[in-house]
Length: 97
Image (cartoon, rainbow, N blue to C red; front, side, top):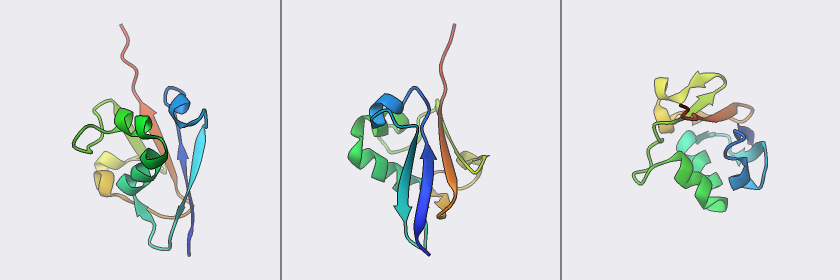
């Protein structure tokens, strides 16, 4: 059954997605990978994509992505499958001094 995945955007990245806190992305009954969700966001908001992933497509060191509270790096990374109804949280670390 197709549905939506909610992607929560941190305040530092919101200006890159039109100020939105949350993006609802349609997925089919197979779901989507984290990479596919980021591709969909990046297609509409290319600067967001460059802030989250490096030139090779890997997550940047200072960006963490959680699927229902679990760090995707401890799962299958960007290949982690996301089903409709699940929540993805993007966190961008802020360096301080």
